[in-house]
Image (cartoon, rainbow, N blue to C red; front, side):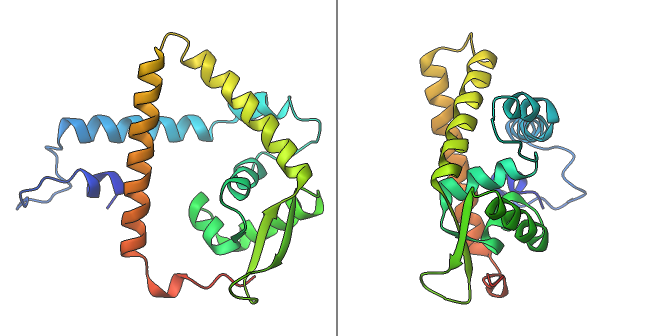
Length: 182
């Protein structure tokens, strides 16, 4: 079941659960909007525009990893893979590439020396700063006719939804998914 379906499911039990064809309209609209946002974020055009601003050539698949490491680091590969929805072996190779480029450094974990954590370097922070500036320009263009209040409301509600989703995942996480050795 999709996270949105879980968060917005009806309070009253549904007896005929044939993938609830009578979905709550707010849930339906929210789900479709999130699918559109995910689709947009997965498209190459925004990243191609962003990569043209970078002095260092960087593969498109590495962008979200570098940003997540900067935002959440130091972070283990398994946790990072969970955050970006990729297989940890793929993420491990991609983090190794970021390490080769000097954008992240890998080291033994602070709490568990068997866990390999990635942390952004000064060079990585510079690249993330360019990514952030370029994303801000893109979003400002997209939201040019939005008021400041509308932007704040969106940010507040998206942060709340993300926090609720993350809390749900923590509550329902399998105990065997915590191994983060690399």
